[in-house]
Every structure is written in C-alpha cells, then in structure tokens.
Amino acid sequence: MIALTLRKSMRAVEQDRLLWAVLALFLLLVFGAGWLKPLFASLFPQLQRPLYDHDSFASLVLAHLQIVVLSSIAATVVGVSAGVFATRAAGREFRPLIETLVSAGQTFPPVAVLAVAIPLIGFGVAPALIALALYGVLPILQATLAGVESVPAPALEAAEGLGLNRWQRLFGVELALAAPVILAGVRTSVIINIGTAAIASTVGVKTLGLPIIVGLSGFNTAYVIQGAVLVGLLAVAVDLAFETLQRRLVRWQSTR
Image (cartoon, rainbow, N blue to C red; front, side, top):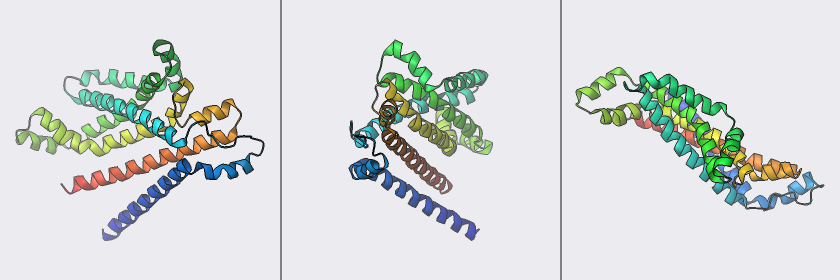
C-alpha cells in the first residue's frame, strides 16, 4: 500500500514537471520566435520569409484561447444541462433523442458547419463558435450521463434522509460526486476544440491556424510547421493541466 502510494506520488511529480517543461517550451516559442529565424532560414533557404510575422504569436495565442474558452463554456453548459435533464424522471424518455441529436452534431465536420453558417450569419467569430460548440458537446454529455449514473445509491439515500431538496441533492451530492467524470469529458472537449479551432481561420478569425492557412495557400512549409507546433504544444499543455486538476479534485474529494 505504501509502495503504491509512493509510485502515485512520483508519477504525479513527473507529470507536474512535464507540464512545466511543455509550458516553458510553448512560451519560449511564442515570445522568442524571433530567435528561431536563423534556424528556419537554414532549414528553408528557398523562402524569403521563413518566419511568420503577419501577426505576433502572442496575439494569435490569446485569440485562439478566447474562442476555445467561449465555445467550451457553451458546450459545457449545454452538455451538462442535457445530461442532467436526461437522468431526471421527466427527461429519461427523451434520452435517446438527446443522444442522437448530439451525436449527429459531431458527425458534421466543423468545415461543413462553417460552410452552412457563413451564408446565414457571415464571416467572423460567430460561425466558428457555433461549429466548435456543436463539436464539443458530445464528450461532455456522455461524461455527465456516466458520472451522474455512477453516484452510489447510499449517497442519494443519505442525502434524502438529511432532508435535502432536489436542487441540494443535485448540486451538493450528484454533481459533486460526478465532478471528476464530468471534468474528464470537458477535458476531451477542450482538447478537441484546441485542434479544431485552427480551422476557424478559414472564415477570417485570428487563431493559431492562421500561419497554417497562410502557409498552405502560399506554399510556405515553415509557416505550417510553426502553426502546427504551437497548436500541438498548447493542446499538450492544456491536457496535462486538466490531468493535474482531475488528480487534485479526486484527492480533495477523498479528504472530505
């Protein structure tokens, strides 16, 4: 038992170190990109402009994070609300319909959603937010259903015995105990959105996908690599941060 606890502690320390290492590398590339110009110039001597300089990488990161956060908040609200409703007595008969509709939302590629949304609401952030939110609901809905349904019956009976009303039971017991599972769904949704948000640059939104789009249209491989590396590092850093948060949430629940 002591050996198992020690291994878990060492693994947690290693994951924290990896998180800080990835984050440090990401920030170094964002704010120190100018130092890499000689490297890309040597790797791509045929390119006159081997380093993307249309916008600062810092501004692209902020814009990318903004659209990911907004779409993830919308997906979380919809996914958790739909999941909770489907587990109530009044909503159980609608569960198959809810799951079918949400699953159908993810079967449509974000590019197709953007193509449909642009004629209706134009270019800009709005169609990108709709596409990302629709694409991110399914993991959160599935996690909410699994988490709420996994709450032990004795915990619900104890809450009822204490005289808690349905809202107190929902927020104080069911969602509290299901939080680690729901957070895992949010984690999956956010990581998907970080990668998918790059496509939003096709409709005029500034994201880390802009160097990729410009590079592909201008046959500039260096731009594509710079954008892809930053998107990948951001996704890894956020994924590790969520893992740390999940671990601490479970530890906090075990001490209650």
